[in-house]
Amino acid sequence: MKRQNKYRKFQLQQQNIEALERENTRFKRVYSEYENMSNELWNLENSSGEPVPDDFINAMILQTSYLEEEIEDWLVQFNNNQVEVRQ
Image (cartoon, rainbow, N blue to C red; front, side, top):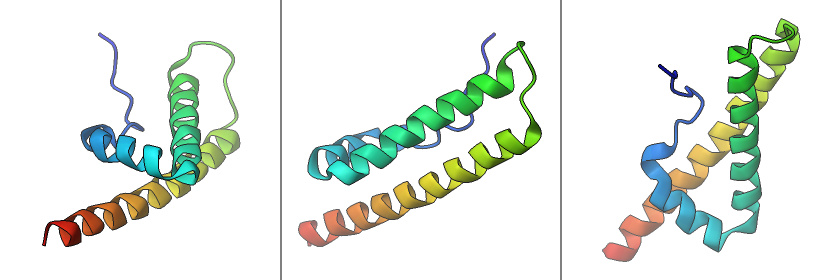
């Protein structure tokens, strides 16, 4: 059985992400980079090939977490704007 990618934490907010990608090219680039890094990190941690140094993996985890924080900030702001529009 294939294990789920733990780095793909924004799957439940896909509609908001798609809307933000249409509205904001910078968000689209950041989210694309996050997807690429999280996929690569997942592949590195689950491959049976040459071992990768822990320092490299830790640096990727750190960069991925920075991108996650930035994406979370955008999503919070987007959700707040949606609530304001409805009121």
